[in-house]
Image (cartoon, rainbow, N blue to C red; front, side):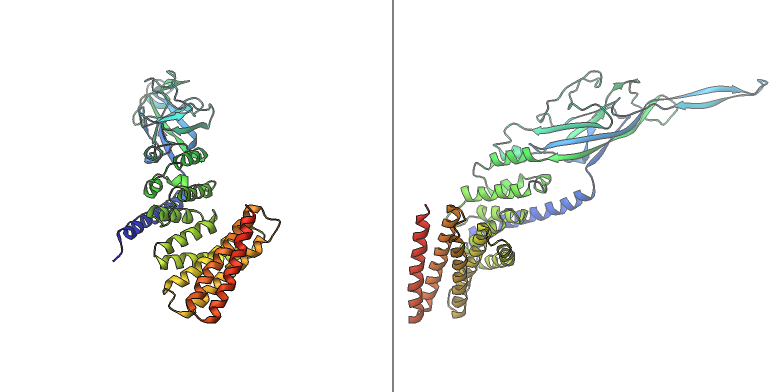
Length: 427
């Protein structure tokens, strides 16, 4: 039976992946329809915008408001008679007065009383008879309103960071035609009608990314972090990679341990799936190794195997790139370790294949370490990887227990010592 930690790990992993897949589905839907709402001219109270769509701390939002309303549309009757005045009648007449947001602006504000925005809310009795405050806007038609959602302690408390704010709007109470008659045009009286269209022109998540960076300076559970990430944030192509990197670094600095925890694995999984290009090899290798150390060999094999061709291609295309070289060599080493663990080293063909993978890994790393054009840090890391791969190789050879393989193990161990010395010289 699986142990408790394994159950917890699988539970968090399942939730993380389920959330990621649901967010991807939402993104596909969002791409097909703009975030848009309408404000009715005859409605005098604030009404909800965007059907409950929320905006989150740090997001800078630009709204564009366009359209026309018919303000105080007039209806009357003119008496008409024929030329003899013997027959008279009344002709129904009307006159519309169309205005746009430049004359009767839309006023927008957060629905939550404890939510604030930047710039701060303002008030203008000429626009809002009740004296309510609203977000400042740029005059003109279409009208533009730009604001950043601000919540106190959003940079330190995940619950606040992950709490969204909804907005509401109405059309100004007064303008060139005076106070708006808030009656729909259903009978022959002075009335108002029409509507403004409100659309989200852009959402800038740079400020939200800054808040996330501050949040991740403190150790958090994977579930709490993942649940606080809203859809527009993680699906923002401009910063998806940076989000993945932030989560990965959080996992390495605050969750790394000799035995991988459920939180550690869940964060790596989420970062790895969020955007494959973000430190993809490094994150994938860490995840494969975490699976292996936790005893989930099938997941380790699947992850390392699925990454192999991509890392090999990246290395072939960029042989001078120390990161591409190191990530590919590390992948080979992990594949060798998986071979040893799958059947506990009891099958000689597994040992032989693992030895081949360790030697290839060491060779690729060592060749890169000899490149004098690389930085001392990159060369040192490659020498260390070359050494570690040869140590793994030595152990595998010793498991074969034949005199020939034991002799090979001794020679390879000597080479590993030389690589260790080379790494030490680059301190």
